[in-house]
Image (tube, rainbow, N blue to C red; front, side, top):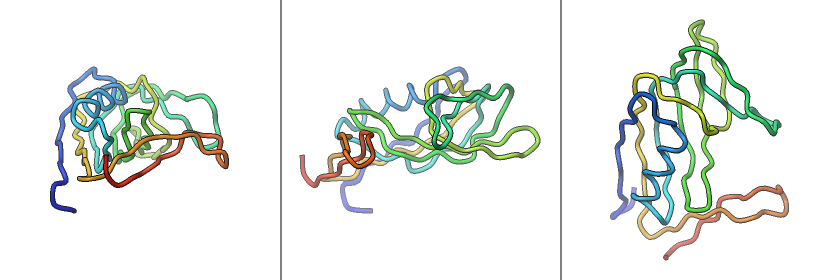
Length: 136
C-alpha cells in the first residue's frame, strides 16, 4: 500500500441494497474512485448476472456472501461476488441491484492515493471498462 491510501471499513445493515449502498458510500468517500478490497456477510434472495448473460437471475432464500470485490467509480460499478446457499453450493457473478443484506455485510473500501478511476467505453469489449490514471 502506498502512503496516503485511505481505507473505509463499512458494515451494511439488514435490508440495505448491497450495490446501491456501496455506490452511495463510495460517492461520498472516494469521488475519484475506489476498490472493494474485501466483503463478507449474508444476503436474502440474492441476484447475480452470470457470465455471458444479459439479465440477472435470482435465488430464493438465505445465502452467505463469501467474497466481494471490484471497483466503484463515478461512472459506474463493476462488482463480483461469490455466494453459498444452505447446501453449500457456491455461485458467482456480477453484483446487480436488488441484493438485500440479511444480517450484515462487512466491506473494506480502498481509495488509492494519487490515482483516479473511471469507466470509459472500450471498442474491443463493447463495455464501459476501467480507466486508471495517475493524478487528478
